[in-house]
Image 1 (cartoon, one colour):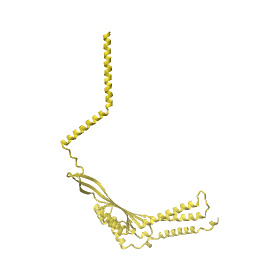
Image 2 (cartoon, helix red, strand yellow):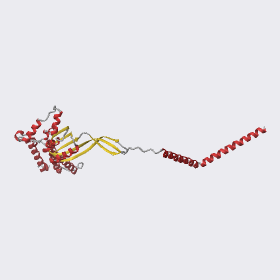
Image 3 (cartoon, helix red, strand yellow):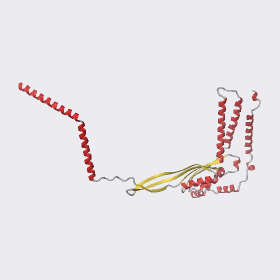
Length: 333
């Protein structure tokens, strides 16, 4: 065909983009020692602190001391380095620990997040009631005893360069560490894959404009599906870029159970019994009402009583007549 002799401009642009991505990939494979800057004194200090951190076999007391200082919350996965110029990392962290005051610690964590240039996307503070008991102490008062614990769940996002600083600042609030996880996932290949999807869809739509119409698969439908795939790839790329710029930290804190005692009204006061004279008067009145109801019931049945009386006298009269007939018969015989 005539259009196959010369490549479409968009196809040429796509091929150029692929060559450019390939060149960038080859450049990233150059010796790292030649291009990476020397580590700064701050990084050396952080590394020294990590080297001095307690090992997994350390005593629990030493481990908790490090947690109180915030050192154990730090991680090499949370510290940016020269490798970030070659790799695309999505850094996330998750932690659970006990604090002395959950409500106060929640506010301090939010302040730390704002101070480090981040923002809070979730902050839930709730009380779990473990026991509630009411003990009467007088006729109108009672003592309510409640045993409860306060939990707080936060999800914050901070710039990836401030992740380690944020973890250390939050770690100083810890009284007992339960969990600390820091992840750094390389998503460079995933971003490259999404970009290649966009390029392929662009070349496909360029070829689609020069192809013949197919009644079973119209051009408009295929172009719409191609644009949807390209847009979805673009959205996924934007999500990854946002996840790279801002790290997500999930914090779950709690405190030891608390006891709260409060004076409340006594609602379990028994009903006072009535005097004997009042109860006797009530019984006589109830008995009179029952007798009245029975009398009225009998009056309502007067027609049945009348029929029963008439039936009785009729039966008795007939029986008396039979007796007289029988006596006369015996006399005549």
